[in-house]
Structures are given as structure tokens and as C-alpha cells.
Length: 66
Image (cartoon, rainbow, N blue to C red; front, side, top):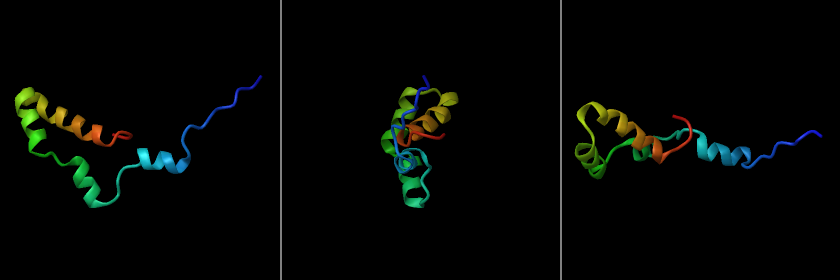
């Protein structure tokens, strides 16, 4: 028998979750680091790892496409 694939999300739901933001306010809110983020970076990461960790923090705020 042929298996049918199930669609969990509609195309609109998928777009909301995975498409990158398109306005500057949302981009700034997601990808700008605040004082708490900067303190976490300084306290927990070595200088050579801070950039990568900062990028991961931003990606966690808007999962989907990196």
C-alpha cells in the first residue's frame, strides 16, 4: 500500500515559523543582544567562542532557517 504523507503545518503556519522576519523592528528585537546577553557572553565564554555563542543565542530566538 502507498503511504500518504501527513502535513502537520499549513503553508501559512510554516511561513510564520520558518520565514525570516521582514521588518526592521522585528529583526532588531530578535538579533540584537541586550545587557543580560552580553553579561552571559562575558561570564561563560572564552573570547574565541563569544561570537559563535552570540549567533546561537540569536538563532534560538527565531528558530527555522539560520
